Amino acid sequence: MNIKIFEFNPISENTYVAYDETNECVIIDPGCFFPDEKSLLLDFILDNDLIVKHLLNTHLHFDHVFGNHFIHEQFHLETEAHKGDEFLLEQLPGQMNMFGFSSEGVQVPRIGKYLKENDVVTFGNQRMVVLEIPGHSPGSIAFYNQEAECVFVGDALFRGSVGRTDLAGGNHQQLIDGIKKKLLTLPPDTVVYSGHGPLTTIREEMRNNFYLQ
Image 1: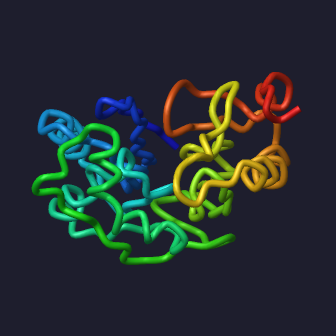
Image 2 (image 1 turned 180 degrees about the vertical axis):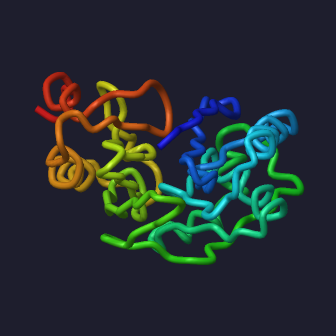
């Protein structure tokens, strides 16, 4: 499986396009905010003749959903996310204003398909299993591809850190428990793709992440 990483919007959010030899792909957390960011994402998909099968969100904080409406318009795909974060979409303008973004004219996406623990997302020859890891937000989920030895974790886990839990519905202990139960039990060589910052591995976080000791 191939993974293209984009760093979008002023909060440096990681957007991922995962695809394989069939040219089918998924877009995970489209955070493209500015017109040139949207063009960059679209051009990559078109230039590589990719067929977008799913629009996936690890969670629904504003910086991870900026591009959802754009992707919906381009590819007629609905957002796939956990129901536990649906309330965040209603609060999207307020989230944006709180962090200094203008919410004028914002298009609030809607969830077209609810994802839950052990659901399977397929595209091409790929299979990704949904893991529920609440705490950063109530509906935070991860997408684990066992064969590709990688997991997309959103803002649950970062290199050397974990997600903040002081936003609506956050719970620090719940987050730590979920990481230890759902992520640290994955094979140590599993590559972790976070919502912000660099890649890491499960082994690296087990050894060196202060919050998980």
